[in-house]
Length: 93
Image 1 (tube, helix red, strand yellow):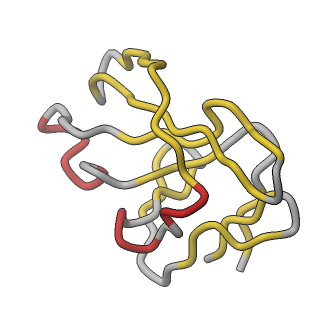
Image 2 (tube, helix red, strand yellow):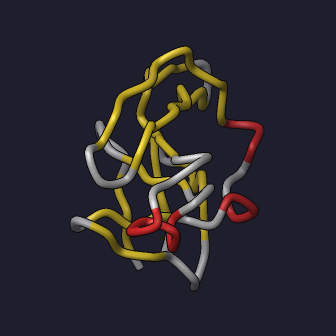
């Protein structure tokens, strides 16, 4: 699977985990040069507290377009540290 934003592959892996129709990519599969830590946090009742990244590609920013759970509930252990996308990021084979 590939995550693409602004015509650039920002993550690529054959080992994504699908939860609630979102592909979660292993942390080592993201291209870190495009990810900037965000101060945004949200809470999912069954997964835990999500942390966000802002994507920066080709001089354009996509605020909070990627998220991950550094700590998860026992129900979500398969996605601990994995990164998912939304807000215009395309995920495809």
